[in-house]
Amino acid sequence: MSIEKRVVAVIPVYNEADRIHDTVVSLKKISLINKIIVVDDGSKDGTVEKIKDLDIDIIILDKNYGKGHAIKVAIQAVDFDYLVLVDGDLGFSAIEISKLINPVIENKADFTIARFVNSKKGGFGLVKNLAKFGVYFFTGKMINTSLSGQRVYKKEVINDISYIPSNYGIEVAMTIGALNKGYKLLEVDVDMFHRETGRDLSGFIHRGKQFLDILFTLLVLLVRR
Image (cartoon, rainbow, N blue to C red; front, side):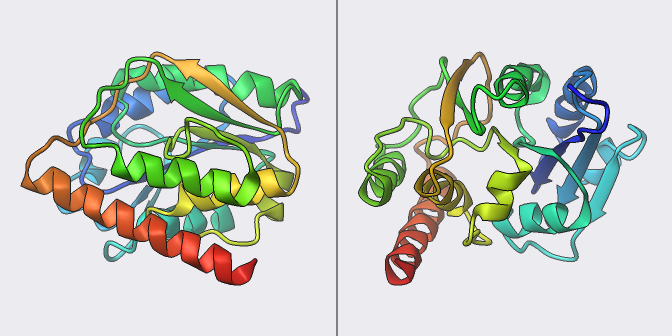
């Protein structure tokens, strides 16, 4: 890879104090990554305190705006050639993101998405199915990673995506936008682990918000079609 090419990792976080340190430490071990930016989306659990001494860039938002908004703030704030998106709760398994970077740098794909090989089922699959069939409806492609937040994009792909929502619909919208522009996707198997929402009240509330955000995103895309 040319030394002029900048690989920037962006981590949007909200209340990830228990895992963000390990996530960042793991990413810092990946030599291909030139810069790491954590966007704290209004955390109230001391997330920033866990990483302030790790020599990375930290953007602190004044309140919780949403995952998509946090990512867009970072995109607008930094120059990059390759954008690496990483969830803050991966812990040490974040090292696996290197498997997604190489295919994009080597032009084997325009963007990559992580496919968790050890993923555990948390809910009833309603959110995943909505995302999966939403992508199929708009692109004619059936993929298994519509919701995965672990992704790598070439800059031109990001620039060519016309609609990036500010909420949990961001992954679905970016997938649809890139595929409809003809960019090549590669789903990459990874041995990653992250926090799975359970079948308790907080888990159902979280998945309910995801479902509504994705549904709204799909409706917006339908109107914009």
